[in-house]
Image 1 (tube, rainbow, N blue to C red):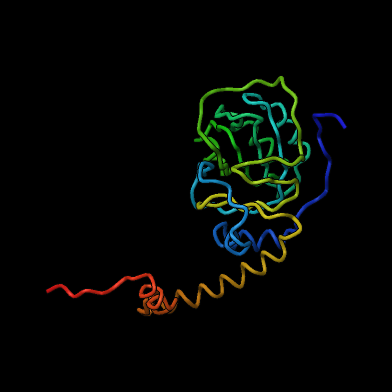
Image 2 (cartoon, rainbow, N blue to C red):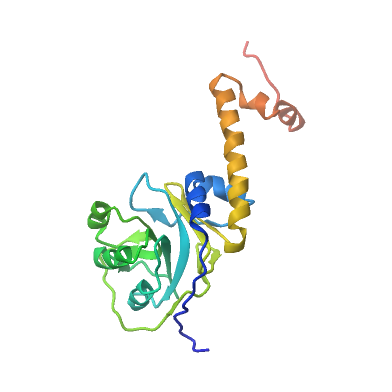
Length: 228
């Protein structure tokens, strides 16, 4: 196989599962998947109040070169999230409103970018969500080979094409394609449990009692002292 490839794949997480994961949100999904899959806090949203869950189209680029993002556009299907990294650290502005327009025309619902983004005002006006490492005016070229739909690493997490990507104000989480359904089930159970706890806390019950933490405090040597 060539070192640089564009892999054509139909591997996707079913839309009904993605909808459920988006509703649960990245933090709940992270907990439900055994606290796995969280991409580090260096990748942040350029917008607020947006939740997305889609199947990953992965892109590996040469730093400062967005040629392979253009190649990836052809592989995008409706509901996909494009996840882009570079072969060495880069904060160059790899994506702007023109590429976003092209991606959206193919049905992409967002981009996770382990590099820089620009045209931020235009992207916000478009309503096209991006989570990126940096905002940068620095432009790029289109000259170097890379790959599309191969395993990549972003924020310490391996992301394979077709994996579920959940992104919102809290950050980005990836769930392996084969675990997506079971993680959704666990996330729904967690959400129901949290709702019950929320009602108890709103009624005035203390977390110390609800979580039975008083014995732990005593075991750790924490004592209560009344001020004279």
